[in-house]
Length: 110
Length: 111
Image (tube, rainbow over all chains, first blue to last red):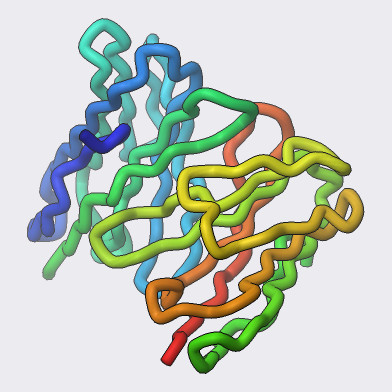
C-alpha cells in the first residue's frame, strides 16, 4: 500500500466550478501536512499547509481528519489557471522527510 | 533570485556512464533532499541531508551516492547509469519542519 494515496483524476471541470480532492495517508505518526501544486514539466510548489482546524486561503480550503487519516482540498470558483496537478504531502518517519502522493490532475476548461 | 539551483537541466547518458547532478541553495536552509519523479509514481526520496555533514538514505537510494559539500550544496552522483534511472530529478531544501523549496529539475535520459 502506498503511504499517501490520491485519486489520479483527471478532473475536468468548467470555469467557476467547485472541485474537491481527497487524500489518505497510512502513517498515523505523520505530523505535518501540505498541498503542493505542480504545473506541467515544472517543479512542485507549496500551495498551503493543512491544519487540524482546517484552513482557508482565498478560494482554497484544506481540511485534515487525523482520526480517519484523511486530507482534503476544496477549490471554489475554478479558474483556467488552476489547471495543474495537486500533490498531497505528509511528513513521515525521520527528520523533515516529506512523502508525496502521486498527484491529482485538474483541467479547468472555458 | 534566491532559491534552489540545479544543474544541468537536461542530460542524456549512455548505460554505464557516470555523472553528478549539482544542487545549491542560498536560503541558509539546514536540510536538503534529492527526489526522483516518474510517471504515475509521484516523487520518491532518494537521499536527504538533515544538516551539513550528515546524509541518509531515502526510499530509493540504490545506484546513487550523495555529498553534502557544505551547507549550500548537495550533489547526487550516478556511478554507473542504468535505463531505470531515466527520470526527472528534483533537489529541494527546507528549514526545520517547513515546506520545501524545489529546484527546477534535471531531466535525465539513460540510453
